[in-house]
Amino acid sequence: DLDPGLFASCCYIRLDPATGRACAARAGHPPPLLRHPDGRTETLDLPGGVVLGVDPGAPYPLTDFVVEPGAV
Image (cartoon, rainbow, N blue to C red; front, side, top):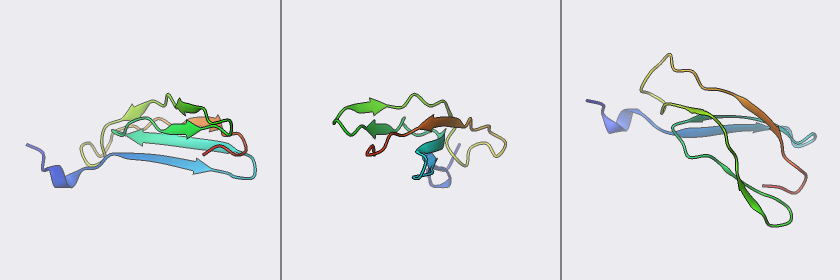
């Protein structure tokens, strides 16, 4: 049995606003959404790992991508 208070999902994105380069990792969290300057919304297809706190040795794949100016 896992205590539900001992784990959490997470999506971590590191962004360099000067270049638009980003690196992301997911831990049991839904894929992030990216809203483009023209209003389009895109689900980012990022591989993920298990929720935090379940397996201390779990791998969390990193994905590099570029965010265009004006996107959020």
